[in-house]
Amino acid sequence: MTDSRLSRVRLNLARSHDHPNGSSHHGYEFVAPLGDDKHIDADAWKKHRDQCRVRRFWEGEPDDIGHLVHRPGGSWAFHYDIDGDEDDEAGYRLGSHAFVPGEYVSIKDEDGELHTFQVVTVERI
Image 1 (cartoon, rainbow, N blue to C red):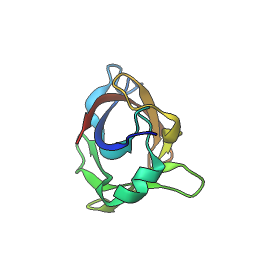
Image 2 (image 1 turned 90 degrees about the vertical axis):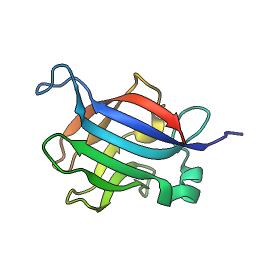
Image 3 (image 1 turned 30 degrees about the vertical axis):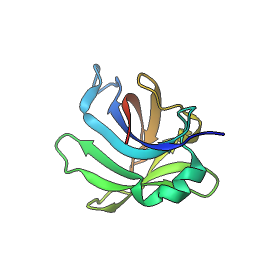
Image 4 (image 1 turned 60 degrees about the horizontal axis):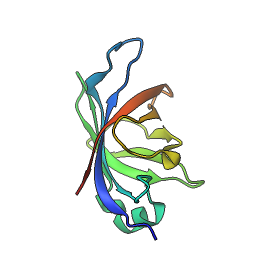
């Protein structure tokens, strides 16, 4: 049996054409239930969905605040329903990623552009 507890995950923009060294000024902080395997636990998310919040921070822009949502078919996205003017941003196979520092994940922004982020911190809350 997996023990899933809420964790705060910080993602920073990884190396890219515009940011050859990556950027700690562009990224996400979100809360999600992670199991012992460090994957998002969809069943635990159902019980804690109101607590599964996200903050998108992007230098030069106001923060967007919303929720981590589990879409039909099993994919995950960030839905900005509070203080945000962005469309949903979909994670690329977020459900299959282990959230441990040093790992990489990809997120498709509201314009459909895929960006790679590095997991910087994972803290149990």
